[in-house]
Image 1 (tube, one colour):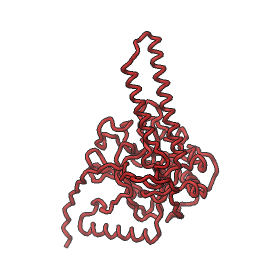
Image 2 (cartoon, helix red, strand yellow; image 1 turned 90 degrees about the horizontal axis):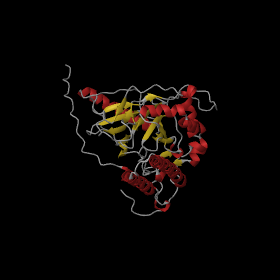
Image 3 (cartoon, rainbow, N blue to C red; image 1 turned 180 degrees about the vertical axis):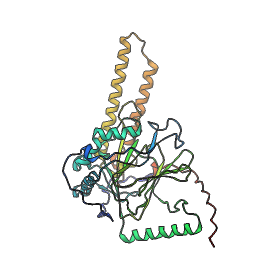
Image 4 (spheres, rainbow, N blue to C red; image 1 turned 135 degrees about the vertical axis):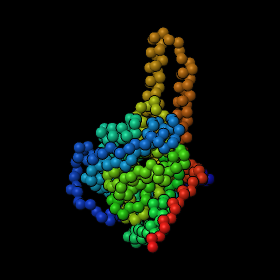
Length: 398
């Protein structure tokens, strides 16, 4: 719902927690070396990349034909440990932790100041080349504030046991009744159907996925079917299954998504002591591509001064480059003795007017922003869900 009253910004509550891993991996020697692609990248290309056409979205949706990748290995274990050490440092937890009505604990805007390894990782040319190749378009990080956004959820051992026991009982019942493999009916969303604030994201798993069930990102296709990107132990894709599923395999694995243009929702995780994911946002590098970035979901969980400065800076740089290109074009046309292209120039001006108006709309006055309160203006209406047909029960064995 829209925010009805003007409220002064207040500091979002900062929950205390201690991330744990049920089955820690073998210790990795701590180093202070800079990010080195040869040491810290373990990139294995995704088995498949799905296009907008593959998920039945209209031609021209988004800024490239790319939709989502299958999960792929991206980082070595050493790189993951280095990232965890930085993002879970005392300085980051004390100064960069946010909470909202949609997420209990998020770490944002820390990389440039407190996490040099994380910052250098996502700014590295080889890393950018990997993400760009997957996305089918040359990309750059959205802005420094959005490098390495962290989502954290932690559960007690008792909560884990209860969830896994409930899941095991349901699985056994399905097997007994001959309906095993039907969709998990407790797929309840953490965040409802929506689109992201920024064009592209790379989501990286920083937690051990052992015993992790669920934690999917469900993507809505153009036909109303669902494609799920998950977090546990395996990778599979079933062409005729409903829903189709993509699973993040382990620490250091990642998924790339053009989330600004694809409706999706985040589903809850069962059985995990912790779930820590790192989300880095990207946008097209070339200034002539559209930039549909918004601040709807990020404004209430950010240092507004820093977020607004970085957003305004890069948008004005895009505008500056576009104006330079247009000026060069009309000057060259004049030198060539061509008639002034009135219609074309007026179209250019209309596009830049819309660009500026869009930017102005995102810069909501500080006193009108309620920190930690994300309204539902980012959500999209969901069509009526189609009920899957239950398979015929098997006859019981005598």
